Image (cartoon, rainbow, N blue to C red; front, side, top):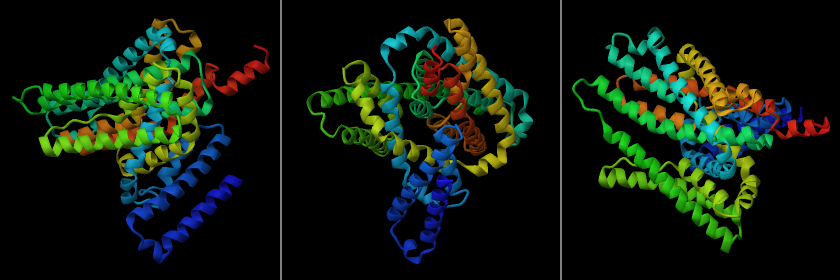
Length: 449
């Protein structure tokens, strides 16, 4: 009740502020700051409400963003959401550092077999199953009516390559909230990171193939695949260098560590943007270092190449709450509800089939990797959520296929939105089923097991 009252009070104050003439005359940056403050308060209260219902807090953050975003109540308009994009990217870089810091080499080695089998099975089943479904259900895609069969093949391949994408940010947020630890948790983090890297590479190859299918006589654009591979390699190398820099700072300075880590996350995001813009405008080269991969690699280096991994995690934990609220609330605010309204039947079927295929891939990977039955049954539920990489795939489709790319991107965004709503709760249930959450561990201790 107190949370609901607090949320109503925050909404009332924000309504009064929006109605004030003076507020409308403020510079856009000032309005964005006010909106960010409101989003932090509303997201925290919504997250607490969902936690009281034994649901993941990040679901509350996402729904708060959707509710108060530009396509619902409009407390944050599209301009404000765009202005806060850098904050959103900063939060993602920070969460990626946390994700990398949770990847412990010794435990990953012990789980390498099941990680490899699970990632491979999910990639193969999700790609192939979704592509086959699209080929057999083309009436669900009206934007392809009257187009040649090659267009349908391209769309099927693109949606298939998009399907296995997971969200390290959502995984680390739920794992952190549940205080989960154990072999299943390590497997989830490892598979999530591996799947995202594989999806980036496979998606680039599929887009190149799709362009070749649609434009008869054109050659396969190997340059795109080579460029994406170079971007992945560049991000890993940059992450290695960044990780060593953090290690040196923690060894020789250590003062104001949290401020330093936030600064590293900001500079990584800022430098990545500036480098991409410079290469595009000055040299005509489209090259982008993915901050997500840079920071995951950096966190991995700190955790495994130094004795300061625990110190890094402690510093990150101190700032995790506002960072998670900002990232997931802004993700919710940026979702295109119009896309969901226009494509929900196809998106719902694709998401439902994707869940089944991921479950099958997780079960098969666990069986081949020697996991116990309880982990095999829970595995597929842990990888439903899609976010940053999947949204990036939708953006590529929008740019590369101008004739029908907007319709396909809308379908992809609708599927991402649905996965964001169900994925965190599914992961929480999976972690609880294998008894790796703090709540399950405490119950096991109380029962004397």
